[in-house]
Length: 280
Image 1 (cartoon, helix red, strand yellow):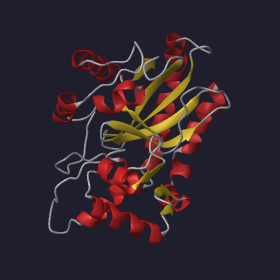
Image 2 (cartoon, rainbow, N blue to C red; image 1 turned 90 degrees about the vertical axis):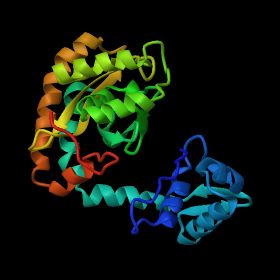
Image 3 (spheres, one colour; image 1 turned 90 degrees about the horizontal axis):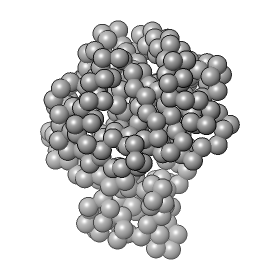
Image 4 (cartoon, one colour; image 1 turned 120 degrees about the vertical axis):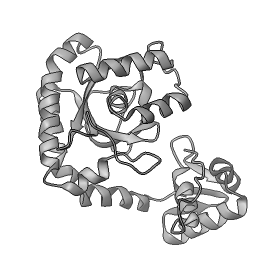
């Protein structure tokens, strides 16, 4: 994942730390191992800076070097597990999602906004095989998912407008929403109904329905969904049967979050000005 450098916000901003994190994030499914020149190109860093970052990460144990290739080591997983344990995610979020999975047989997830993507922070899967799998840490473009449309719909108007101005909405299937007008129409419907349902938008054979998770001030902090194969259930039936269950689970998670304010603070998205969002 290429990450462009942002200008320092203040005198406390450490550009060296930012560059090191950019190097770590450049490794993904499409780039599992890279030579120095590839890392430099992907991160838009000079070869000299990329080399120093990589050498530091190798010495810290987060990156390994084999010949001329660099790749991540399992030690990087400690960042994710630190978040999950410190924020008590498994105790607060997983029980309601597991209840949804057990009652419906669907996969169930919770996600937050991360740039122009959704980022999974909790996921409970089924044993059914689907072509597009997801785990904690998975990212998908928000325009092609029910979770993403729910999260975007309740942002402040300037945040939505900024996304619509810059977004490149890739087409994954013939049903993917790829135009500004179509997405604006969809977002209005989400705000009116309080949910979104996606059919064959991210991949063929997938159907989902998602609702927001609210804090005590009625601000959207996350979204949860049920997703399954179209061979199991129609979209109309999914919405009819899962929507009440999802809303109950979202309310349960929202109430539980009140007892763990640190998790609420970590889930809130922050716009470029540093302000918190959003009121439904």
